[in-house]
Length: 209
Image (cartoon, rainbow, N blue to C red; front, side, top):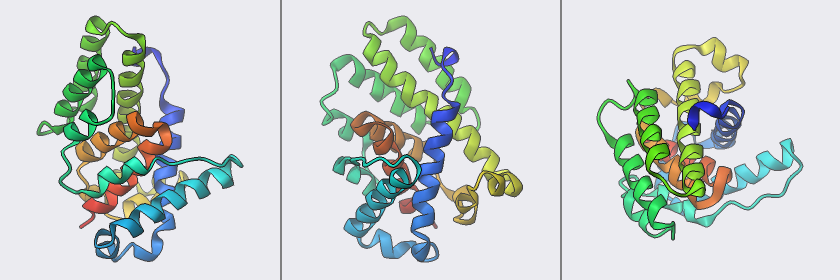
């Protein structure tokens, strides 16, 4: 299913929201400890930034789920978060396997083939179209976002052209993408694209050196 759906626009939009949030936090860029030491401030700033993004770009008032606070815990057990989401048994078990995949060593080196193999298994074994859709969305965004982030890490010119230079400047190369992707997926299952963007941004801030 992942090969049949174009996630590039959604993934780019997701990346732009995350970058916008990081840019809104520019006063804290060189002092991430300020945000990490005050979780409620970080959550408040991230939520406010996401709402501001949609007011500016889509003239839309959006809600951002408070549940993204799970990402404030740098050592959060994402399996426990998923357990509490109230997902169907089928989707929950699939989500557990997806998180296990993201946590394996070397995920940055062969992310796409791993996820493609995982989705082939899901397409063969899942009975619910809704479960397949939810996993496909999370994994497809992860793949496309990883491609964007990889390019940004290596190409300053591209970062500038896309207006996403903030990520490179904030030492994004030091961030564990597997962890961000896990928070991204859980945030999506918790609150759709806004939840994914919020959880990603928080995860990045919490991992900055």
